[in-house]
Length: 234
Length: 234
DNA sequence: GCTCCGCTTTTGACTATACAAATAGATATA
DNA sequence: TATATCTATTTGTATAGTCAAAAGCGGAGC
Image (cartoon, rainbow over all chains, first blue to last red; front, top):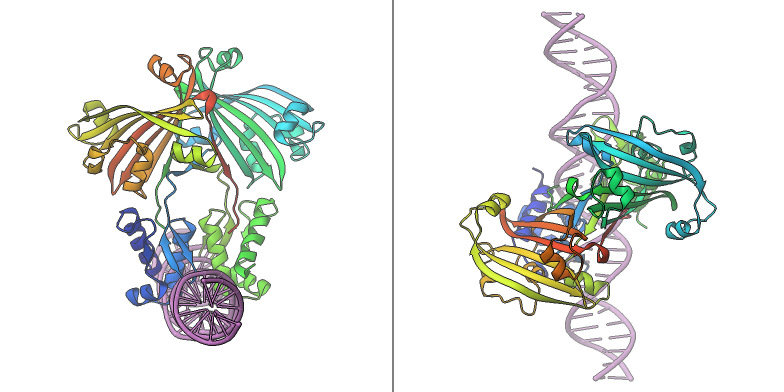
């Protein structure tokens, strides 16, 4: 284990064990240098890493202090459905229920902050995991941002996965809600009208332009999101 | 702007713009040294930061490459309800509906991976935001992990906030689900039986011991989680 | 009292260098 | 042909120093 990793984990341990509490002062670099008998660069690297993780705050002249914890900063890996199913060892297939090219329309344009005459590809897609309907995906793809979508049938690759190959490293915003299934949704998902469903809305940008907007509705009895937060090792 | 920040953002920009695609090779440190006319340490710092964010992968002898993007790694800040309401400028109050000290019981012990004879404090708490019921909190606090909870009435501070002061920097696991309100829940939340509700379950550990287990149920029409992912600047 | 100035501490950024570890690819050997 | 060995490349870690920027503190002057 390298020196700066040792410094990092030593301090991290003291913080997460409650030994050093929020607001407590951390030894200044110079003290850690003598304690660990290493150079200042090495100490600095460890403290900078802790600061970047939000576990300490650093101020010139005054020193470094244990930060106030964010109660629960959870990282959720929300993959696309086929990837997620594969990772979990389930069988996944999908059906395109609808595919139209049209203009955006006034209400949606407002919602997406895009011009109302923008051409979009509108998709509706059913995901089936282990033989049961698992999600209905209602998607809008901005055709000026992803012109190649116009020629893509999505017969062999689901839209979410296809987009990932076309437009990597986008910025995204998520909203997770609970909604009651309306009649149409309930029929498609083979569940009861009014059944609680988990809805994930995601808007994706690249270079400031909306790429896609999607609402994925899962039946509440067959789906959940899970995530873990813990101060991780380097 | 510092040199290493410039290197960082230059490369980041090339990646998120799609200019450099997953699998593409990044110039080796030596080339960046001559390009930016700086020392290797400075280049290394920038590349290490990119690697830590998961945007590139680095391998000795072969070089650094643009990573395959995780579709949506979203960071959700799930604060406690009172903090969240305050930040959003809403008025928050709460009521303790039930408070008992008892043994855990077989079924729950299994679920929490704790011994069934462990003494726990069981709380039920209603959160009211802007005058309307916003969440019902059903919580278990392990008394051997937080003995001080036995004497705490939670009259003036909600349990989540109190625990945060007692046990900072814990590890946590989250599950988000959609559930239908049962009769009791519906009555407390002043909504309809069967209404879609968003349920957040959180189990919290410190030093490997369970500290608390809580299920917070929100009425679906009054609550949602939101989070953003974007490759952030340094 | 108050304001401004300079001193000191602490972090931030950077350089030039050194050696170590990993490993892909070439070369030598059985 | 298959295997072992060498070599060059690239990253990883660390040192010992420099200069700069931020900011708390005390003192000088009013």
